[in-house]
Image (cartoon, rainbow over all chains, first blue to last red; front, side):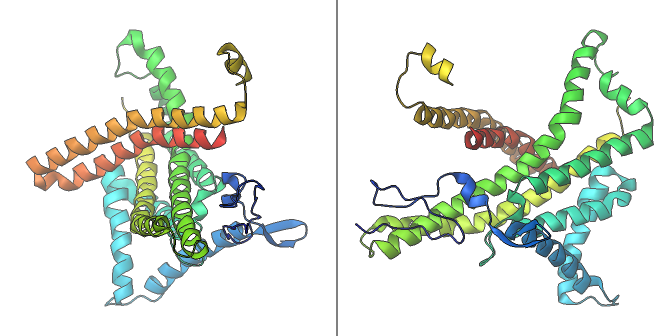
Length: 272
Length: 83
């Protein structure tokens, strides 16, 4: 019997001889491995790397087109971008950190815009790959955030920052060593980890959901000659999930930025 | 995993058992955050209905609470994939 191949570009499908229904990728990792496009001096450049550069360029281009020339009356596009910028500035930077949050606004804005563009790559046709679903990118961004909030804590409060975490004065004295222990683990280890994993796992699950639903829908419809209603159901469900993924992409960019701002805020204003 | 299977007296294909156990583990990991997000959003909606002028502040904190709660379920999903 003819074997059906789930056509994913660049992925060698692994077809079991005894199963004639579908060829599946051997593991879920195959969906997230991209082949080397070309190599420069022995360093392989993959599609993900190119997409990361593209995401950065798109981010810069959006801001450049909107604000490259200072206008008295902004264009329509400029007004739309101003909504995003004003939201990050007023609601996230100033709203969470306080009046001195304007100093961290450039970092938070670049974080938000880059993650938003990277997430939305997952629902853009012909790209269809959220670059933030590779752990390296969220992990790097959360480590940068980690360095910023630790350094800000020491610069603003001196050694009192570390003391306020290890020996919190707001809890009863008998419990301080225990709460301090938990606080050290949660602040210095769990915070960067969960910040990265939250974005990464959301994007991975969204990408998997879309791939499985739309891919199996297309395979069922095209290869089984419309004989199965299942394909139509999968395709319809995948198209229902599509706008939800756009919502998740925006929400996760907002949540990442919001949590970065909250972590910086806890370093700026320590509890006495 | 082998030791666990031996003590339980299970013979056969351990790899399939591993996948099934990971799936059950993810299901268990999703229970707590599901309840947690329900509580967070429910109380946030109640707060917004009682005091609509504070809706912006409540919404920000609601997303914060959702994000912190959701992390547990996502770690469960991650562990399902890496086992």
